Every structure is written in structure tokens, then in C-alpha cells.
Image 1 (tube, rainbow, N blue to C red):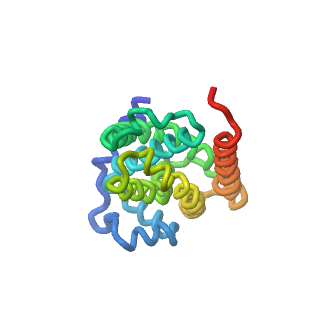
Image 2 (cartoon, rainbow, N blue to C red):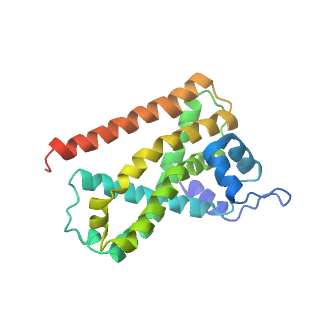
Length: 227
């Protein structure tokens, strides 16, 4: 575990080659969304993102908001909860909780991502490369969800009011399958995997599990009871 944590900390100081550094710009965003093969080839060739800790944090914050949305739909968080009664408390929860959630996702989620690469036929997968592909593909839904949250913050008195009028979870549901496709294309291009097995582990099964989770949450909201 200490080795994994040291790996995380080392990412922020790893410099890309001076001749072809990776830079976030309009072309990079377009490549990530529409030409992920080109995006990930450049990303991994130039030693990855300039601010990987920020990428981890962004994913962690989006994960916290997604978790809150799920708990709201299922009725496990009451509207009277202090976190939902003011933006300062809510954003504090998202910002602080995002750090731990992002690091946990990097360690555990990154490990599972690498396992799926193995199940897809890849051998001797670089741990760092696997996690970079995973986390950058997740940005496809993480950034829009946080941008939407920032936009509704000045429009409503608290998160519960915003959620009742414009639930953030609906945007995540609409965008998340696209991040699966971006992840799949990155896997196919960056790792030596079998096409059929990669399609199973990075498209079919994730989509089935995602739809099953959405169906369960909404069915619970309509028919379940809070214990």
C-alpha cells in the first residue's frame, strides 16, 4: 500500500519529455471525446497529465456527488440533513470527500481496471498507464457533472432544492455511457487486448451493470421503503 501511495505522490512531479509535452487545450478535449485513440497515444507517450493529482481529485468529487444523488433517490439521505441545507456545507463535503474518494478510486478502481485488462488478454500491464487511461476516460462524465453543479449553485438556496428541480443524476446517466466508449477505445489502442474480450469487459458488462444499478435505484425510490 505504501508503494501505491508513493506512486500517487510521484505523479505530480513526473515531467513529460520537453519536446512533446501533454497540454490540455481544445484539441485535447476534442480528441478525448471523439478521437480517444489519438488522445491516449499522446497522453501515454508524453508521460501523462501535468496535474494527475487534480485529475484524481476531480474524479473523486464527481464520485461524492454521484453517491449523494443515489442516496437521495433511495431516500437514505433526508432533506433535513445539514449537508443539504446550505451550499457551504455541501461544497465542503464534496471538496474534502473528493480527496479521499479519488485516492481510493485510484488504488482500488485502478487495480480492478488493470485486472479487467488482464481478463481481456493483456500481459504485464503498466499500472500507471492503466490508471491514466481509466481516470481520463472518467473525466468525460466527471467534469460535466461538476460544471453543472457549479452552474446551479447560485440559482438555488441549497443542494436539495437544486436536486428537486434539476437532478444532477439525470445528466450523469446521459453522459456516463460515452465515457465507457472512450475507455474502451483507449484500451483497444493502448494495450494488447483481444477485441471480443475487451468489448465484453469494457463495454458490455459495464453497461449492463450501469443500467442494472440505475434500474435498482429508481425501483427502490418508487417501491422501496427505508429501513
